[in-house]
Image (tube, rainbow, N blue to C red; front, side, top):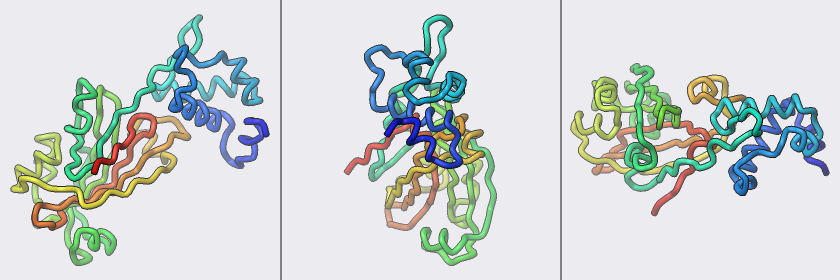
Length: 245
């Protein structure tokens, strides 16, 4: 079965987007490591059984994400191949995890609000449904490119002011210390993969069809009391997870 035939059977998914996904996978697998360049448009058009315009649309989408870089007269260079390695361990910390892999990191607090705990959140944080929670919406960048977009909940009675503490410090760990939690540990992490939705495309500066790695993480203080539940979305082209014992 040809690649083109396999793609055409995926109802509702544009051909250029399917081709972009294929190229992403090839780059991740190291298929073009020898030259560091993508094959010519005509070669790709023949490979996928489409016209050059469709190939150009796929290349343009990947270029907008910083994965490819079209070079006048030379072809298309693979601009970003190596992912940031993000360790998940007993003490998972964003800054410590990738700090030695980048030159600059930035933490943005997009919003914070107080809301009643749903039944699901209350169960995770060992609270009663309806208990007030503080929700932070945050964005982390590394070397100016977005790396993760997170929604995080904290018990409001214990962590009043955590929004201001995070905005001041740019770190959940530092914010916890400001509010009296000197150390905390990861209780559980669930990892899944999804296609980015419309808001993810905007926040993480991705093109349609991009794949996200999603973590659902629960942290507790040293007495085992849950202090934080977070859902974070990472571009699969930017980050890979290393699970440490």
